Image (cartoon, rainbow, N blue to C red):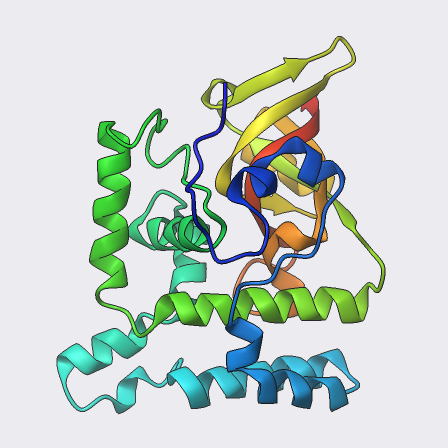
Length: 265
């Protein structure tokens, strides 16, 4: 069963390549077209900063300066304050509370627009663009995106910052071993299975993973263990502390068809 992808995206790789198991086994760098060029002065300054915590503080200040992130109280009208409040911090935190929320739909919509990968789950399985679940996802996405302050551009810079930091802190690392707790394993499409608990699974276009096996168990009776390409890590809790639960070493991972080992409780 072929994965539904969009014919266009904002990367130099076709969407079907990004989604494929071949890419996940042999990853290539991903870059959102125009994002680094638009913020070239930011990355030039980052190159001069030696310590990770100083780079982190500089990123937060840059987001405040360019997008007024976190400065919603300074708005002069209710509509302006509401728009400014809907920044990258709010959507990342909303995802943790409920990935099927309106905030979750906006993040899934960002993945769809940038990488060409539509979601396969949002409050239910999405089998086609005509199904009811996809309509719910579109409604949630458009409603919240319209109330935000250039949220997709903010998320572009979040992704590029994370990719930059991963390369600085872990030079030459192509994969990270991550774990995803599964509450209902029947929500997933298994493309291949073997007798040694190995499988190829179609993941949603954005997924939460933990860097620690023991914490993944808290989220279900099964755990997917996967070697996740660094290029597919959209966000990681230790790179911007205080947004996602740090003890769980939370990562938000762009989806596709992944090789996994299925652990059962």
